[in-house]
Length: 373
Image (cartoon, rainbow, N blue to C red; front, side, top):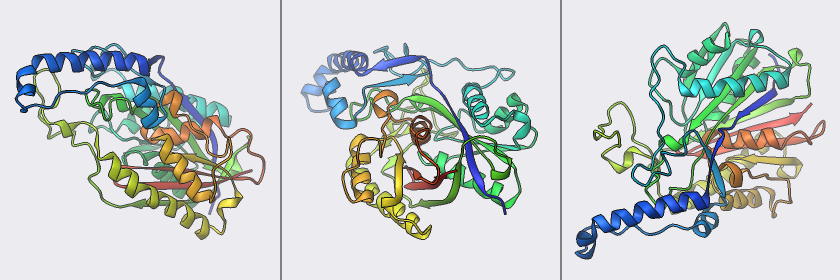
């Protein structure tokens, strides 16, 4: 049996940024146009008027100040309100694979490794740009990696579930080194015309290198244990898939073909599950919450993370114990906790413990207990 470790991480961040103020201007223009076009039906009570959004509302609801996106102009067009991403030809790299290359190369550079040292690629994300061939196999090919690849989808928990799968394979000896990649184009499955959720998501790609401890030559984190949990719920849902039917303009006819959630139920039901999961994981591993130097939580909502941190630690987390990147990236689905880990882990010293945890649709929860070596 081998000891799996995280030896490198990488983050690809799109150049284009949408601030809350910019998003609100576009959304309110769309809402005004909708209300004008449906004025009679609204007056008759047949159609609900679209309410206005505001930057204050967005920040209070989420803690988000901006988000990076792959295409800004399409999202901010009141007549469109979704990204305009060019359909790639079959002989071109897919957009998710293209995003993955920078993140993977950064992770390899940090680990002091090359593609020749990697045996496998797991692309773990909440939505894939196609059903097949697997995005992971395309990334593997573009990177020049000999071995295998496969895709994995557990929504916002995809990264931690991918790390568990990779760690198990490294531990058993079926692979020496695996890249877990999380290309999240969440702007593509967000309904930007819905005030309750139009501000939530952003785009990004993260990569994590999992390898055997005996092969590592740089500072690293030992993967002490992992724990995954799923419990079915419809409170976060996206029915988009190959059975969908689109209007001629490419927009799904059904509202539930895009991201949907019952926010109040999610808040009420998910937080106890996550807190219990983390505390149970620590207990099973022979550790307690007061041993944790840091919690790298899924970046969905600041209030949710504050609640979980307080529940797990038994007190309000001190500055730095539970870092947030929401204000800069928004919710990036599975990649959020890995961005937090990548940006806030260098100060961890030898022997200190930290825990990565992600949670979301499913419901799903994944946690990774780490020790700096």
